[in-house]
Image (cartoon, rainbow, N blue to C red; front, side, top):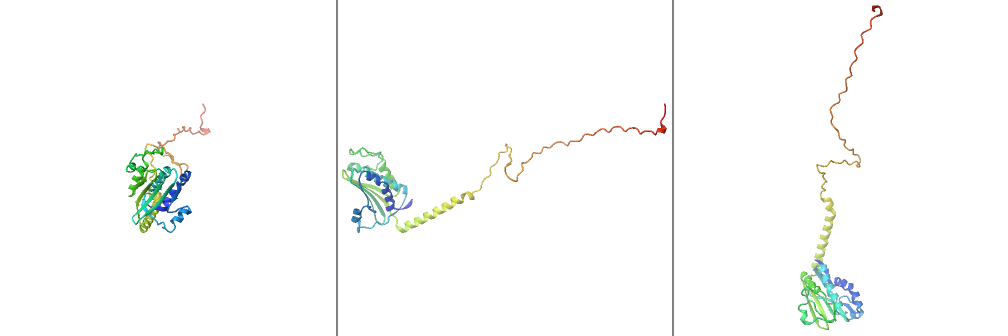
Length: 252
């Protein structure tokens, strides 16, 4: 859950679906922030739009409101689609009203059940029966409730009620979320340096290969131990007999 300022949040969804309403020439009105001068004059002096805070899942709220506005545009051949926001100290209520086909009374009690479809002969767009069921489940998950008021052939109004939080609690939760996000960012940034790096090991059966590309390293040289080599001893030739003096030589 996150703190949501409902008025601008729903307005963004409203603007995203405005083109679909213009394609059907519908009078598309967002009462908290009316765009046309006529509606502004009607609302002028009657009320100022207060700030409505809720603490919910943004995606859940967006899906619910989008589905309700899309249905209002789809099932309104001509006329108006009006989105409004009201509330008290404890709740906020988002309403989506249309002047479309309406829902028969006998179908209204089952409208939010799974796979229930209103077989309206005025339109072929029956649907799967899951949209409103999911809206109910998501609204209940956010701690709220959803209901409808409708009259056949005269239109429908869907209401989504959610728990409201005051301004003080909203600011506290926003500050807390900001601190948590900052701490998480710091943790992510320092995580690679804090965790030790485990060196890769070479299996014993494989010989290690020296890195011959690293600077100032010399590849180890394998030394093979061999028996000492004894140089061969050369035989000394026999000494020649000393020569006799000439006078002592005998003559035969």
